[in-house]
Image (tube, rainbow, N blue to C red; front, side):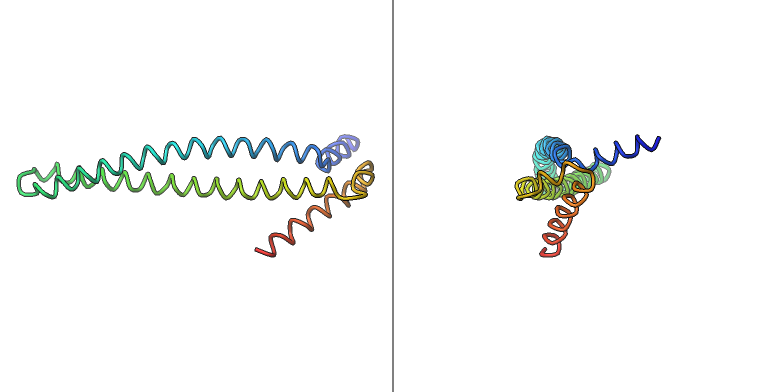
Length: 144
């Protein structure tokens, strides 16, 4: 059982594995961004169409039944809310992508640092290497 813990610790401290997992997460987030951008585009078009319909309703306010007016305004509110939520999700994904790209860049720099390759061979050296990466990431976050 103790052997399993050491093995899992070593996997967690493997910079190559961390780099590959970061690349995988980056690909997934990029795909989600593309899908979200398509959804935002559809919702923007729907919002524009509903806004046009709402303007038509306003121009014929006296001739349209009250329930149709309510439905038009409800549709407009629903479209705006959906668009707002999707834009928020898209911004969150873009922010996550930015953070992953920065982390990947830091991992690349840590891998290229002199003396890092030899220190990663042992678990204690790997901890020191990851500590260096962690310090680098923290320093960059502090700059922001």
